[in-house]
Structures are given as C-alpha cells and as structure tokens.
Amino acid sequence: MQFGKDITKELNLDLNNLEAATFERVDDIAVITMNRPEAANSLNTAMHRDVVACFDEVNNNDDIKAAVITANGRFFCAGRDIKEFVGTYSEKESNALRPIDDPNHIMFATQCNHYDVWKPLIGALNGAAVGGGLEIAIMCDMIVMSDDTYIADLHAKINVGGMNSMNTFLPPMIARELTMTDKRINAQECLDHGFANYVLPKDQILEKAIDLAKATALMGPDSIQRLKQGSIELQRKSGNLRYENYYETRKANQMKMIEKVKSDDDMLEGMEAFVEKRQSDYKKAVKTDNDFKPY
Image 1 (cartoon, rainbow, N blue to C red):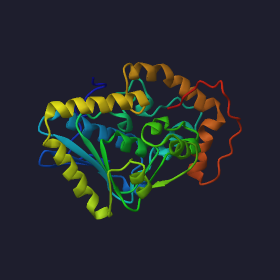
Image 2: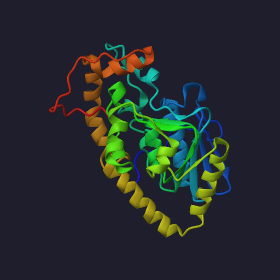
Image 3: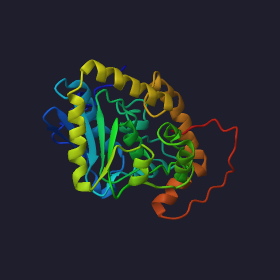
C-alpha cells in the first residue's frame, strides 16, 4: 500500500545533485546520507524532500535490494528544524504555510520520518538521533550505533507531542522516561535494551550497516517482502508510519493545528525558548480533556 506521489519525478529532482542529502549505490545497496551537518542534520523542508526522493528510488528501483541511512557530521539527525518552523509561524497574522503543512502543495504530509520504505532499511547512527531523527531510526529494520552517541525524544520539552511509539521498542518505563523527560539513552544502553543490533567505533558503523544490508539481499525476496510488510504494519499501529486515510486525516486537522499555533502561546513557547536558548515558560496546566494532537 503506497501513499502520495513520486516526489523525484514531480519536482524534477536529480538524485546526483540533492540539496540536503546524498544518494549512492554500493552494488545492489543504496546508501542515503543526510547532509546538513552545519544544522545537526535537522529536518527542514529540503531534507524531507530529498530523503523522500531517495526512499522513492529505493522503493521503485528493482535493482536495489536494501538500503542504509546515515548522516554526515556529529549528529545522525537532531529532529525538526525548529528555526524553520518558528520562522514560519511566529508571525501570527501570516497565513503562510510550510510546503509539508500545505494541503495544496505536493510536499504536504510527505515527512521522511514517517515514510514507508518497502525494502530492508539499516540505520547507521553516526551521532545522536533526537526527536524526528529518532523517528527515522525506528523506521529501520536494524540499527548499528556509534559507541559515543545517544537517542532522545524531546518532543515534550518543546511542547509538540511525544513518541508513544517508543513503547513498542523499549521497556515501558524506560520508554516513558525517554518521552516524558529530557532523558538521553546512550548507545550501550540501547544495545542492552535491544534497540541496537551493534555498537561500534564510528569509523566502522557504515561498513557494518552495508554488510547487514547485503545479508538481507541474499535472502528470499518473498520472505523479505512478507517480513517487511509485518514490520510496516506494526509501525503503523504504533503511530510511527503513515496509515490508510493519512492524507485525509492530516488535511482535516491541518488548519486546526495552524489556528491553535496562532492563538495559543504555549504552542510556540517551547520552540521559541529552544531557539533563544532559555527555559520554557508554559502557562497552561496539564488537562485530561484536550483532544488536540499536534503531531
């Protein structure tokens, strides 16, 4: 079950000349590298677009048997580009929307951290995976982590939800500490909790990830297809991947979210505090009757 359009064709993208990612082949393995090291590989519109273009190529090219995703620089991915989001929505009188928030734009709801990749995907975590970067990590079928890195959620810290899906991947109490606080879980702890397959020195992780991808490429295609289908359905149930009627649901909720951003100071307070490097000053109490879910 596929969703959305082929971004590569629709936007006339050249996989050899992307702005925020690189796409390479090692025999029948694709290697996708997030490439905004100056911004901790945070997910701006260009990064979403380029990584989705790479994922489309993996899905659509029969010569590609599996893929590896990694990044340049100190971070694997620091999550949402907060500066881009705040820069768009802090002017409350403006009706401007980011392309991925605009129901009339091809990029609407095309977020690489919720995209369904239908071939084995191996994560080579060269650095910290935070927020949306952690969402990319849990899309992976196997994970190789650098021994000096960590994972963190931090959605709650900036008041934009949290990753309930982590309850699928970690022991419940560990997952709740991760999502409800600013807890970091280091690579060795990830290995101990079964969240990583291997923890290695940074200069060895990409080679190991490619070896794992090649190992899956030697398996029976029908079996891999069924196993991948099961993995994707599990992630859909946990809320991490797109689901049936995803776009329709997003369209129905989109303007409600934007209006709340414009009318509710707490919706931007966490992100503005992050950009300004200060402690957030939230005004509201936690309520039990708030059915609004920003992401």
